[in-house]
Image (cartoon, rainbow, N blue to C red):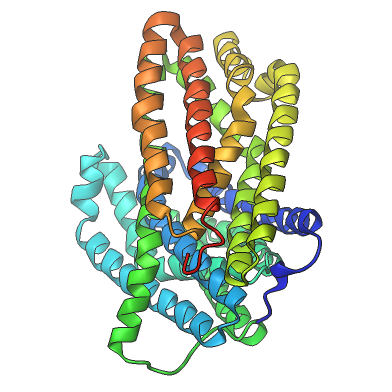
Length: 447
């Protein structure tokens, strides 16, 4: 359980770890795309059911990501301190807390399928399909949440390779099982949408086994001793102090995106179609910077724990310069290729016009969006997760939503996209200032 991120060249280490993370993120995206592609072949009703299911899955995923961020932040610092007992305690208690939260979600979810999805607007026919899927998916939720938390803990050691391998493995398992269980190929029964749920649960169950194996056999991070309820509860309090605001931040973003989509909808369904394509292109364009912000979390955590604040500060500076450079490069490429990219997704002139407009305005601030993500990630490690959440609230509810409403009224779609960019620019300036304030305290004992 060596603090591997406290030595070696900073830039090269960050680049290597970020590369592994990119593969992991691509695998996560591919997993959802595989399910959607096969279910779409069943029919429109089944695809609509998946559309209703997605927001619920996203909420649970946000909770899992929050727990993972909290665990990674605390475990990475403990690794830097060289406190093996604390590392094992935090890792084990994080997994136990995940299991407890999963059980709460499962019981609540199973008893609220009809009212929740009816409230979301599902028709009776769609509701039947949703119920079939969720009766399988809810009990299998532990196979989603616990591996997500476990993989974040593995990343806290500086090991980005194995979590990415585990995710890619799950994609291939899902890809193989989906057609067999959905369409009943060979000796397999035709389960339809239930087959999609079963394939997902089986693939995720295998990731749980692999994650626990890596945690124990490779990193020796699990504890099988019972320290007493008071110790466990204190661990949970420490974890939740970071996890709750981190989960809230992850929930704020899709909520705000839904509101902005509603504002774009005023300009017609083709504008929404173009906006939706633009967001998907944007996700791919920002993949490198999202990966870097994830890597920076354990890097800074280990070095703070090891009493090497100068090394942590240097990593933050390198990442900030890279973010601005990469963001500028990406913006230039998308500006020049906006129309060819748009024509890959649609032949409709209005949809193309919306995509081109977005890709020639919003990417200008991608470098600053990277600064925002990096700052939020490091603030979590500095035990200032509520500051990170406050930044998300300010960006979304103070800057983005009022700005896009004003922009739509004054300049149409161009105004909407312009204020999206402006909101990220202003929020990133604030984020960097708050981070600078936190960095100044790095050398103080007990941070």
